[in-house]
Amino acid sequence: MKDEKSDAPLRGYAHYSGIAVQMAAIIALATIGGVKLDEWLELKPLFTVVCSLAGVALAMYVVIKDFTPKKKQNDKKR
Image (tube, rainbow, N blue to C red; front, side, top):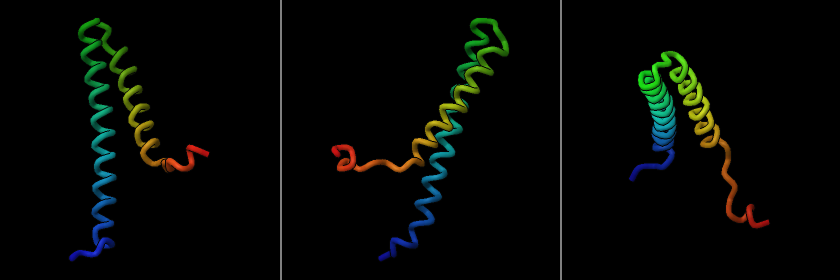
């Protein structure tokens, strides 16, 4: 049977890879949405820039939220 310590690097790699993919997806979807809005409203750079920056901000929020320690249920009741 495998030792759990040998799985630790793989779990960390999988966790951080998942975060990177999630960040890339958020930023890409926001940018594509901005491009589509610009095409639809004929305001070429406006929504692309705004949605790209909003996507970066949202991705950073998700990463920070993921890295902050979570409180246990017992701590909330006190």
